[in-house]
Structure formats: C-alpha cells, structure tokens
Amino acid sequence: MYKFMFKKENGEEIETIIGPSVQVEGNFVANGDIIIEGTVSGSIKTEKNLRIGDEAKIFADIWAANAIIAGEVQGNITIKEGLELTSTARVFGDVKTKTIVISAGATLQGKCLAGEDKRAKAEKIEEKPKLPVINREKIQPMAEKIK
Amino acid sequence: MYLYLYDSFLNNKKYNSLLARIETRLTDLGIGGKIYRLSPLRNVNDLLADEVKHGIKTVIVVGDDKTFTQIINAVAKLDIILGFIPVGNENKIAQMLGIGSPDQACETIAARIVEKVDLGQANGTFFLSNITVSAGDVTIECENNYRIKPQGNDQVCICNLRPILANAQNQTNYFNPQDGHLEILIQPITSWFENAFKKSAQLKKSIIPFKKIAIKSKTSLSVITDGQRVLKTPVEVEIATEKLKIIVGKKRMF
Image (cartoon, chains in turn purple, orange):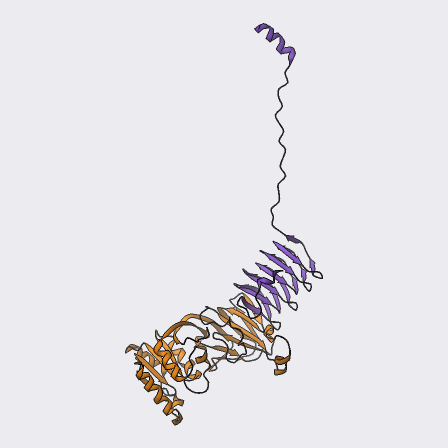
C-alpha cells in the first residue's frame, strides 16, 4: 500500500542505504529516506521515509514519517503517517501510527495505537429547571381579597 | 590573467605537437598566459602564492588526474579559479567535469562556466574525488552520534565526486560535489561471477551521507586521498563547502 513512498532502487528519492554487511550502533539520524538491509542498534530517526528489508535486524526505537517493515524490529515504533508490515515482518515492541497495514503472516507483539485520537465526547443531558408548584389553597384567599 | 601549469611528464617529446596545438588554440581564443613546467624541485604553493600577488586570477592545469589532484591542495587555500586541460591516459576527473579532449578543454576554458564545488578534508589534506581505506578492521564514527562497522573484507571509500575506482556508475543521485555532503560508500568485494549472475549487487552497497566522520582502527591502516597521498588512521574527514571555484563543461556529471 505504501510502496509509492519509495521510488525504485535507482530513483532520486533514496538517500541513505545501510547494506547487509554493515552494522550501525548509536543514534542514527538522517534528513532523507533510509533503506536498511543490515543491523542497527540504538535509535533511528528520520523526517522522511524508512524501509527495513527482510534480512535487516533492528534493535532500536524508530521515529519516521512513513515506514515499510519487512525484517525484524525489537523496539518501539512511532510513525507520523503510514506504517506497513509485510508478511515477513517481525515486530517486538509498541507501535504508534496514524494508519497501519498488516499483511497476513506478519508478527506484531506489543501495544498498537493506530488512527487519530479524535474521540467524540459524551454530551451530558442537562436537567430542565423545575417549575414552582402552585399551592392553590394559599392562592385562593389572596384572590378573594383582591376581588 | 591565466597561468598554465604543465606537468613534468609533458616534457616527453611525444607531447610536443599536442602542446603546440593547444597553445595555438589558446592564443586564438585570446586566453593565452604564463606557462610554468612543474618539477619535483619547484614548490607549487610558493609559486601560486607569488603569482596571485602579481594578479593571476585563473590557473589552468595541463596534465592528468594526478596533476590535477596535486594542485588542488595549493589552490584551495587561495581565491582563484581552477581549470583543466586533460592530457595523458588517466583523465576520469575531466570526464566528470564535462571536459573531453584537449581541444574541447580549450573551448570550455574560453566559455568559462565557473561552479563552486565542495572539497573533502582528511586530516587537513583536501581531496576532490575520493579517499579509499585499505581493507581491515575499521570503525567509522559519524557526526559523534553513531558508529558504522563494515565487515573486514568490505571496500570502504569516502566520496565527493562519483567514484572512479568503485563501481557505482548507476548511483546518479549521489556523489554531487555541490550538495554539502560527502558520502561513505561501503561495498563487499565480489567476484565477477557474483556480479554477473547474482541478483542486485546494488542492494549490498551502503551509501551514507555525512558532514564529519572519524575513521578509526585497532591497527594502523592506510588511507589514500585521491589516489595520491597516504595518511594513517585515525583520520578525521569533513566537508569544506564551496571551497573550490572550477571551470566546468556543459556535460558535467553533477
């Protein structure tokens, strides 16, 4: 569903590629799109898109605008817009996103918060003010005096 | 005013007719100037500093990639424009700058399209193209935030221009010397069989843009800047943005 986020391999959008032979440790921050096929531990942060390949192993918390996950992630995932877990994805951690697509076969073990937090508030039914009860016995002698 | 620096290998007789043709063409185009022949005994830094004092604004290197990259370190410290007339066999930098044959180079210099390009700086040594790290147990510390650990048999290259030695010709959107970043290119050394038959060697590469890194290793390893100068680890590499004013052709690859 979110494959439009990334152009093909030789396209112009891809900025950082971490290949399968490379290990990254620490707070990995990138300004552009990220493709990870290797191992990352620490944290991953990007304002743009993230793709985690099926052989990738991530031991990190993730922040991104959009993400497609096909590999293993051990950590919490916070996505601003859309998250897609493919059939090979294995996620062990909490997920927070606006929209989510989970393919059949994907593993997700953790709390999942998807969608916008726009809850309707329950309206209270206001009670109508009670009209004063007219006591006829008191009013009658007063009416007779007026006459 | 133009200053032409001829590499010492051009003293060979076989280049005489070519140099005569270039000089005639430059005179025809009205861009002739002083000519100096480089030699191991002549200090380029002092020569250029003197000539700048006497009003030289443009320096044209006549030679190959090796000559050009040697001059860059002297020129980067001065406010002058650098041009290139490629002569000899190794002229891949000229291709990237959009300069073809020596005759075309004369036209390019006359047309004078000047671009500011970034340079890399490794332990104070400037480089235009790339630096290569010899194979070994290397750790790269990026922006003081994260560490990259390639496998022992990976080829590690820090690129400003599109790599000459590394096979990354398809990476058209990377390696732009005007983007304010250098790139780490890590690729496993593969056999021709793997390259020919296994799918997508492209995906095995790592390309990581950065502004400042430190290359460290347990044992001292060689780091070669532009195929010329050999440094030893640890090496600090950073970008020097818009450091060099260079004359380029219309067919430049950035």
